[in-house]
Length: 292
Ligand SMILES: [Zn+2]
Ligand SMILES: [Zn+2]
Image (tube, rainbow, N blue to C red; front, side, top):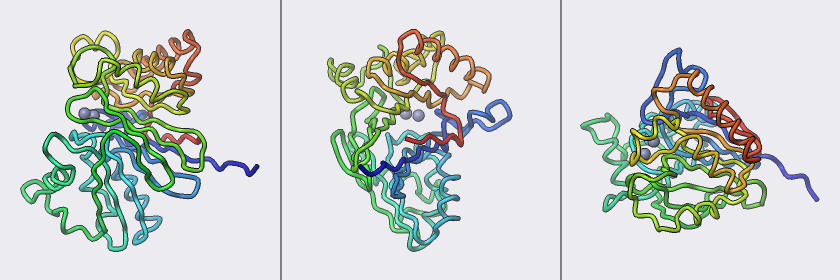
């Protein structure tokens, strides 16, 4: 049997809600969510377009300007997940091709949301004036294909329509789940079915790498029920229930400096050991690259 070639996952933005530059966040990072998945054959899927996508865009242009092919998959359109898009450099050279995938919000189409984000009132270059070829693909819960990856999407517990994605190489191999902005505990009503937790665990069953919202510690949760986010404890419990191999704590709370995240990670690891799963717990760090 031919040896399977690995693929990589790189974290360009790890922070929730708003960028937090500064010395106290230098290790885990201050840019808002953006994760790049590169298949063994070189296909690129980008998860969310927070401010972290700016650095990724610069790297893509340096490497292959005029020939960049990028697939951007948005979990939802909250500001922190699309904020970097207007500064995605591949937009500004002919020959580059960018496709943006994501859900609509209520009656507003994904394209209308992106158009409003670059309206002349708030940004100098409108969406129609980009040099690259841009395609917008509206998606909902279900299954579809992006480049080398088969994608399954599921509705999360968060205000608006927010999707979680599970990506598996079409050629087979380990899968990754990108689940951010998701309330595992009780709090908000998000129109999800009463069987949601069971369905969600089935959706994630046996995933190799689970990237999950872990914004709060337990003490902070009480003040934030209904905000659509989870604690690191809830993320560990979910990873254990779903028999996930590796868990990455993601969408860090803006008020948490590096020292606070160190503490939260140490406690998450203790809990994972006690449960026997997941095998490994990491906290997302800007620049971190994982191989699957
Ligand atoms: Zn967010
Ligand atoms: Zn959100």
